[in-house]
Amino acid sequence: MKNFDFEEERVKQEILKLGAKRVLIQLPEGLKPEAPRLAKAIEKCDVLPLISADPCYGACDLATKEAESLGVDLIIHYGHSKLVKYERVPTIYIEARTTVNVNDAVQKALPILEEWRKIGLATTIQHVQTLDSVRETLLRSGKTVMIGDAGRLGYPGQVIGCDYSNAKSIANDVEAFLFIGGGKFHALGVALSTSKPTIVADPYEKRVFLVNEEAKRILKQRWASIEEAKKAKSFAILVGLKSGQNRLEEALSFKQMLEKSGRTAYLFTAREVLPETLMDFPTIDVYVNTACPRISLDDASKFQKPVLTTNETSVVIGKLSWEDLCKEGFFES
Ligand code: SF4
Image (cartoon, rainbow, N blue to C red):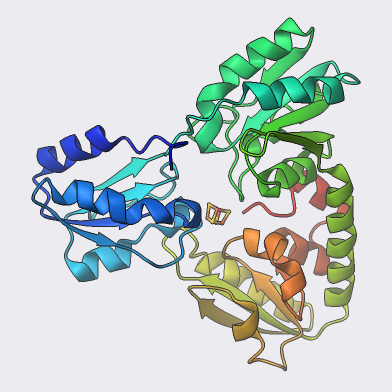
């Protein structure tokens, strides 16, 4: 996997500095194929590497329990920037920045961007280092460029699946967003949380496309799920068990609000929220997802019952209007 910087020299230095002897390696799905190679390289530092084979979708899912039960003295977490405060086992974050050239994809985006002058930039951790050069390219083609920095995430312009605050902080000042990165999930999040035209410049596929038609389709689905939930009587509130997804207090508050509105509400805990496991509870009409909001967006069609985010549930119980929801964001926690 040549397109990512795994900072192998830094990893070795950190291992030596900490005198680590047993190390837990954790990678997100797309980077997992590199795990055996990285483990072998680490082993040369006289260290026992353990590879976490469990799914890992974000830095919210730091393998803290596994590390403690295995007695490791260092976690190496790849592919994300720090999100949860955890100090019991030393942890280093290797952000796996991409080395792929984004310029071709950005050049391809210029004709599509022609109808707008003020452009906001957004991207994932893998590409934050490219934003300055993307800005230069856009400035040269006569655009005004903004990169949001709301102060919640590690880098200006960065977005994650449950935090689009950087994009939202400049949404009123730009006419459209250019998202740099692979796939459409994060770009859809930008479009849904800003209501602005959002163009993806995908440097891996060298593809450029608008996501707004798909965002409109998602909005219709979310509207339908909320309307279905308004008529429902039995709710289960999902509490995530991953280190950065446990929102028990928020779940309790939704339980109380739902009960106050005449519904029955239960608290369910889950490490992974999967369509097949929720099928075991046929008496539940609606799930309220306090864990990862990505589940409600990415997997919506796979669930047989509505799986609402907390902001959507606030609309069901009358705490937010649809307009407020569009402003607050559907998939943010
Ligand atoms: S979107 Fe989900 S997986 Fe990603 S950081 Fe947020 S809670 Fe974690």
